[in-house]
Image 1 (cartoon, helix red, strand yellow):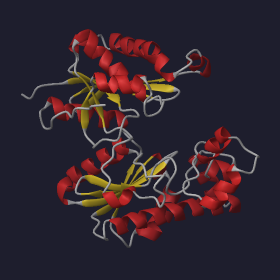
Image 2 (cartoon, rainbow, N blue to C red; image 1 turned 180 degrees about the horizontal axis):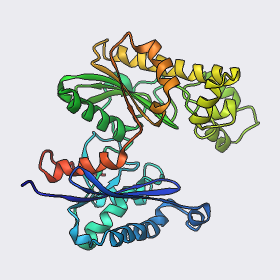
Image 3 (cartoon, helix red, strand yellow; image 1 turned 90 degrees about the vertical axis):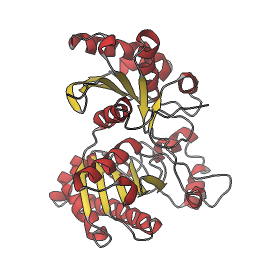
Length: 358
């Protein structure tokens, strides 16, 4: 009988903490804790929340009647680190130091590695992170933006896209290392990636490139953006919020809920239909550009993320891109499972954990 590995997974968000307990591939228990604005406001910095979030992990284990020593590994969501290749990384002091110092930016996901590593320090339980958002495997041509002062950055939904591509290959009897995919993660942010034989050779930055999204502005006419920045009407903070958080659909329609938009579209609201169709058009246009990156040699176009649950969106985008390759839709995002499987592959010695160095 094969060995059973028990893995605790933690995915910290800005206002929530998601926890999962896995026995090998099977999710045996999960919990989502929503944190109030008052709870979060008690901490001046995100990194100050580590004790607060750690208590939630300890309580979860107690509910499962488990001790830390019963765990085979703890896997946390990877945060903002230096650019690195995809894979599973052993959490070490370099990772912890860079995240504690917010060396590459402050984000709730930075807590994932710190919390996982606390079990390593106290109980000797191995800790890992998997495919953080800064995974960078870009080919050289993809790094040029048009201004040497602004190189393109690789910031994308690496965890979900990589897991979905891997699972798609398993389901269809394919080898990741032999196939090409264009994969689009549709959520509050949108990433579209060109995956060549398992490597993401180009991707639309999920923060400030590609199509507009429910809450992000995506690519904008640069000269007009400069005029807006220097108009004197807005602070830098306000402009940043317009680009990420209050851009895209919420800017046009006052809501970032794709479900609300879908309902209005189905009901025939003309204003909503125009904005919705424009977003679908931009998503399709971006997918097409990444088909070109792969020189038209694409096995499947994969559409995933929460937005993949919206049938009108899938139908509209498919009208444009079905000519390129068969479309494979994987609704939602199972990040807890993706994290657990990344740790499991290392525990089973199917792959080696990578080392991170500052």
